[in-house]
Length: 423
Image (cartoon, rainbow, N blue to C red; front, side, top):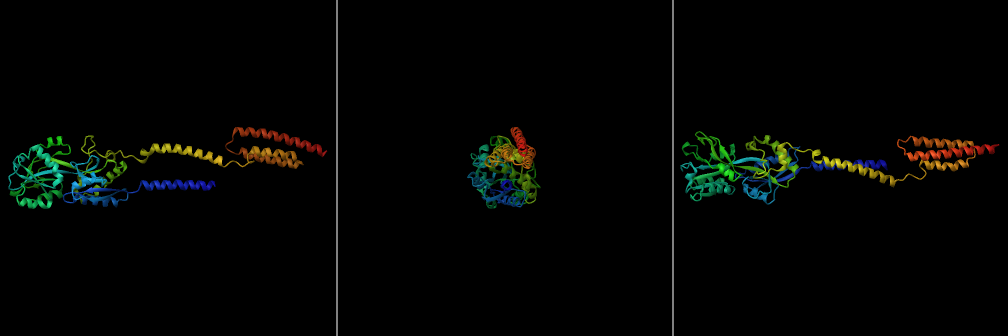
């Protein structure tokens, strides 16, 4: 029974340990909403999902939901339909969002079209600005309107999708373009393709001189200098570093997302980035979010732990639990031993004192010296077994001594009686 009990306990413990390990290492699938004006956001996340799915040591799995537009991704996240989303910092309804990483920055490029002679914001009076991407840039357009009083100067904003840009420029429907895009090879090439390569028909990039004041009033935007020659090298556009605005593009997670999961997600993204930069150069711009308390979107604690190098091991997180569990296990073991002893009493007559007591009757009934010697041998065996035990109770030893003295007296008395009878 003891062997079966021990084997059963070992098997149970091993089973619990295996189940706990498998449960802690199970893959975690997170849904992520992505959308952009050219579909690049969804393609990027699908590639990242494939990379994580093929990485053996990654527990994170991504299920991508293509919302078509950045606004759609923000709306899906706000409604709680997804766990993660790629959103711009100026998106609405991100109260419960926490940043994981900064994917890139969208840079504001306000362009005066060729033939309009527009080179400064003041020259936009009475003109129409085509807002590429439409609704996602409405807040930025409103910020510019408020800062430069564009509405009073009869400046109009017209939403344009990417396919509509060329036709709007050709028909003179718009005299300027407002584009927000990362400074990367893909988007700069797209922008250059809007305009002929003729130097006389080059666009003019307009400076946002009040960028610092706007950033102070609306913290989701940052003042940024576009380097000389970013759009075109010869002739250089811009012809000198030019001040404008930029807005961060985040990967955000729900506030209630488990810290460990957020840490593992951040680590998986940063490790996969180096292998994907060749296909998606924009990933070179991935960075840690701001850890400041007044950041527009606070950083997720799990992501903060990764970037600060404060990743806790299982012993850091559960050390106290292990300590108190070991104490509790010891108490339960003692209780189980006491219960076992109570439920499995020693059989009657198996204790040394009881066996010695039963011998007294045999001594009185002994008929010969040989019987008395046999009884003495049995007493010696009982004493030998008793004193071979490692643990003995002082009370038991005292009781044995009393019993032995009594038996020795009885044996001597019976021996004398047998001698008298033999005469």
